[in-house]
Image (cartoon, rainbow, N blue to C red; front, side, top):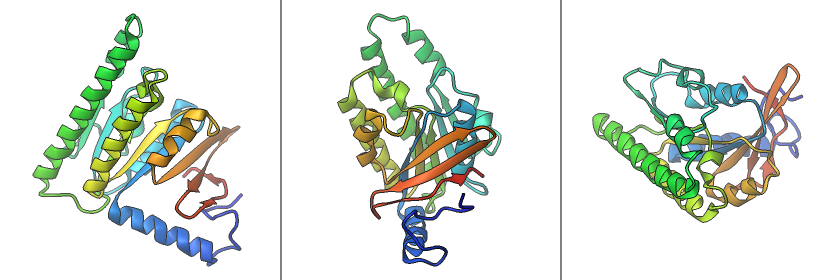
Length: 227
C-alpha cells in the first residue's frame, strides 16, 4: 500500500499526475473547497477522519452533528468543543424526536432549513469577529448527510448542499460532509457533482484507509492508511 496519496495511473513520486494533485490540493486551500466523505465505515472511523480534516493550528471550526448515533463533538474535533474559535451545532436530539412523528419528511425539511440558518449565522458571526477569514481558516464539518436526505427528497437536499457549499467557497473555507454509505450507493452518484472531490473510506481489520476521487483531474488515488 502506498504511504501517501498518489494517483493509480501515476508513475511514482514526481510524476506529472503527482505534481498535478499537489497543485490541485494547494488550490483548494486557497480558493475554498467542499469534500464529500463516503464509505460504510464505523462512526469511530468517520469521527477520527473529521479530526484530521478540521486541521491543527489556528482555525475557526464549525461542527454540525445530525446523526443520533454519532459520537460526541470531542471525538470529531482536534480541540476542546468549547474553544473560543469552535462552535458545535448539535441537532441529534431533534432528529430523535422526529423519528416518531408521522410527518417525518416535512419535519426533516424544516430541520434542514433551520440547520442552514444556524450555519450561516455562525459563519457570519465569525467572519465579522475575525474581520474576514484567511484561506482555509474556516473548517466546517457535517457528520451525516444521509440523515438530512428526508427519504427520497434529493432535490431539496441538493439545494441545501448547493447553497452551503457556495457559502463555504465564498469565504475560502474548507468543508467536509460525511455520507456513511457505500461509495457505489446511488445517493453518492446523485450528490458527487456538488463537491470538489470525494474521499472514500474503508475499514479493514486493524486498518482504516482512504482514497480520493478527483473529477477535475479524472483520477483516483491509491488506498492510503488514515493518519
